[in-house]
Length: 296
Image (cartoon, rainbow, N blue to C red; front, side):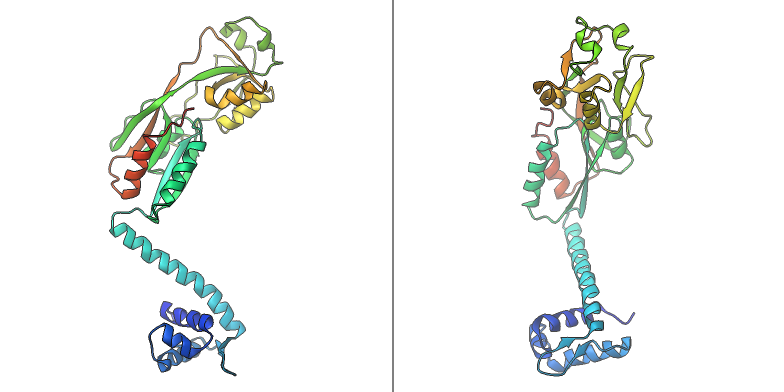
């Protein structure tokens, strides 16, 4: 390969400083060394990089293209160097957080802002899974920490978990839905006659789960609880929603809550993480997550 990172750095410095002499001074090199670097690269590539007429070094069209692409490589190389150093110092280069779709997202953004203020340089990736898909992402390595995983962790070695509270469910229907007019508590014989809206379990390997559906009931399956909420507001069906997700729609009169004879049990929610992870970013997030309320 004829193009080295050192040569690209020289080209970049000349372009920014405006002359070979100024670049030599900035790079703590003698001017002849800078001239040699440029001539050698021009010979190797068979193109002219700088127009040397006049006092200022001006890039040729070929030189401009080389610099534009070269700066991307220089930036990538610099970031790679920083990431390697961070890893050697016990700081992860990337941390994958997976949030269950029943979680109140507002709480995560403040933590992300606090984390960035630490200037650790760790890249944060936030994903979302539904129902058992949260545990699935942790067990099969797609995430480092999960927030809002429902129910106890499926049997798996190397996974730790801690309770983050109880998720309360309400049975919600559109105000004009036939079930809205029936006396409470609603019986399963009443509910089964009408379509249920269900958020699909996003598990890829674990067996997908569902709950809150009466046997024999028609089902409309949607991607997430947010879609389920909107479908119920649209009057397309009925079903259980986390109380905190349904609250605003109930206050606006878009949904009403009905008592049922056989309610869906409340669900214990967990934070889960890889027990082998010991990086600084991982430790910081675990501490903060255990101090944050995501269920209100």
